[in-house]
Amino acid sequence: MKTILFIIQKEFRQIFRNKGMLPIIFVLPLVQLLILSNAASFEIKNVKFSYIDNDHSVASRELISKFEASKYFKIIESFSSKKEADLQMQTGKVDVILEIPNHFERDLIKENSANLSVSINAIDGAAAGVENVYISQIINGFNQKIQTQLYQYNEISYIQPVNIVTIPSFWYNNTLNYKTFMVPGILVLLVTMITLFLSSMNIVREKEIGTLEQINVTPIHKHQFVIGKLFPFWVLGLVILTVGLIIAKVVFSVPILGSIGLIYFFTSIYLLVILGIGLIISNNSDTQQQAMFIAWFFSVIFILMSGLFTPIESMPVWAQNLTLLNPIRYFVEIIRMVMLKGATFSDISRPFFIIVFYALALNGIAVWTYRKVN
Image 1 (cartoon, rainbow, N blue to C red):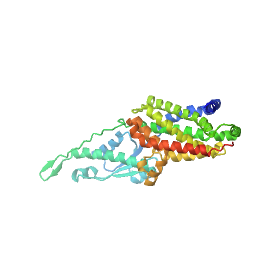
Image 2: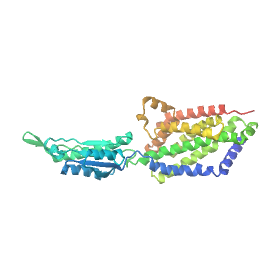
Image 3: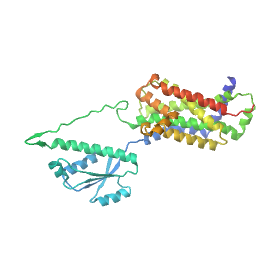
Image 4: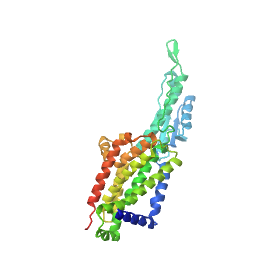
């Protein structure tokens, strides 16, 4: 035990002596959490909207006013022809073109139906899909209002249309604040990346400066060396989690409905998984640059397939099955469940035991692949 404590003491001294690493470890994650939580959002706002009003009627002006009142659309200008509007869309100055045909109001009154033409810039398919939903909601709202104003005649009598009003109930995020959804996931991202990069460059740094050979000829056992090298980064991961939770609560008002102890308990096991991966990378790398690129390669794949930015349910079946091997997927899922839903251990027991298995397997491989000269 004394040997492990001496190695831990040595590692902490090395960390705090490196003045260039301290801002990267303690300051950069906080800045990233503050910036990414405000920047990473799937909400589409300020959509550049234009229209062609060929009818110039009360109904067409009322429809346009609906878009002007929406917080999602920014009215750029109106055009006199579709050709002119298309040219503006090609240059990127317009995202949506609404064309209102001639006799729009007359068709609504006489035939109780009318057509509209909507053109959407779909280079970004995800954004175009969201914009289409916004447009459909506004047009449907306008349509309902028109239907209440127009009487539908049935022979001699008339029937007033019946309005069905829905009152939604939003659970777990009743303000629909996207930061409430993103902040826990970005916190997972920061904890993962910092600990993965530091641990993956740890042992290989000893190789570069030549101290690993000196350690290898000492009577230190492999498990003592590995525990002593990884424990400081395990502590740093919990420190980053603590500061991140404070920022999430104080700055972004993210609710923490579940047990804080459960979050720390799961994170402590999860960090062993990440540190094990980092140690395996370090054992099989010759330079810090090589270790950094390998760690970056795996972290990008893990992050993109974790459900942080893209829902796992929207992925192809083969990709959904592949995410079952991704430890970040489980951490993102659990921290959101505990913080936002108040989940208990019984709710997260299955992914918890999967992470425990990963921790034992990966750290076993890490110790086994560490080559020590006796």
